[in-house]
Amino acid sequence: MTDLEISGLSKTYPNGVKALDSVSLTIRPGMFGLLGPNGAGKSTLMRTLATLQDADAGSARMGDVDVLRDKDTVRRMLGYLPQDFGVYPKVSAEQLLDHLARLKGLSDAAVRREVVATLLKQTNLQDVRKKALGAFSGGMRQRFGIAQALLGDPKLIIVDEPTAGLDPEERVRFHNLLADIGENVIVILSTHIVSDVSDLCAQMAIINKGRVLLTGAPQALTSKLEGRVWQKAIARSDLDALKAQLPVISTRLASGRTLVNVVSDGAPADGFTPVEASLEDVYFAAISGRLDSALAEPQAA
Image: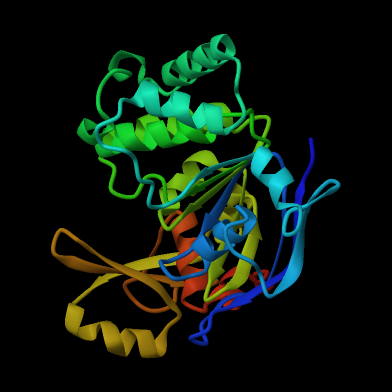
């Protein structure tokens, strides 16, 4: 199985926004999470790898395939579910999947019928295969999106924000589907939802403002913060003053209280208690600019 090697990938749009700033990643077969806030550059990277736009500089290779230049070859080995996946609302799932299979080069009718039936079953859409896509729920539509992405036995699958807007039940169903397909191929999951990455991915990267801030295994990254995340409930009016004094990585409301998480080798101030570190803490430490202090080796006593 072949790795995807990305080196120095950069893209600046005509309005001056630098969407990608020398992005370098090694992505091995399996589920890879690309985590970042909206506007971080995730979709630009996904569209570039999917041959939908050109980079200004850098390279991307899968074995002998130049991903940026051998576009026809890449498209034959690619499965892509973009963030905004449109469908023909009056066409049934079975009809549209059959049409897309023809476009993928499956010309033999018998083979195509078998492939379509298998994918509809794999994505749990067999019972609604005759239903018009316009009547599908958001989760059903996303599962259809995965079905079309799996046409042609792809070696690289890109899914961009696939669980945004799904209810909890559909998110679990979609997670299980992604986990099933992500064993023998490269699946890049681009998302701003931390739990998608922690639940699914063996490797990940955090990206913000076009730059890769952190890469590694979610569990290993989280373990670096064990014993170093502290929490306190404060009045909302005290938040700005606390941020000026301490390395705050995140805040959230819980039962009407403002809970503040701080990264520190020891208790940062009175009233803070240690809490179990999570991938969310790693993410917020990176995004808030507390990356160096949060993930540096603890100081010896």
